[in-house]
Image (tube, rainbow, N blue to C red; front, side):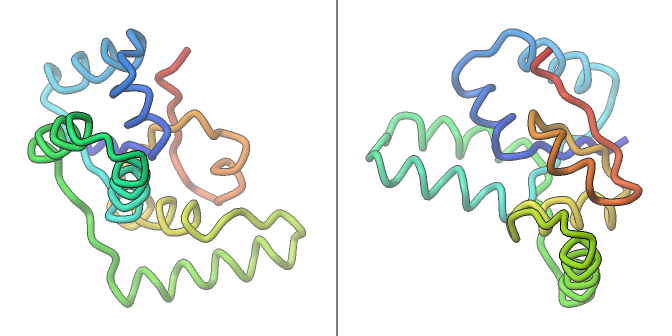
Length: 133
């Protein structure tokens, strides 16, 4: 199974959140794969560069070298645009980055690991787990 980490879960991991670390270890020991959307990659890296956290940036690069980085294709953007249209029509719109991350999880048949269940639960068919609890 592929578990895709949302930006906030990567941040919790970097901060040493024991629930996230424990769940990540269990997941990997069970033979599952860990994925990260290029969008989450961007969100984490831009934040670390902004605060000039060189050591944390190196740690992040070391961590993601063990993960599957999931690109966004044109077909995924087309799917994401339909999700956007549906959410906007329903008055339940979320940020574009969350739509892109959710779309990537759906297309890759992954479980999205996030602490933002409220937003991501708006995307139909998305499987979500929260490892912070």
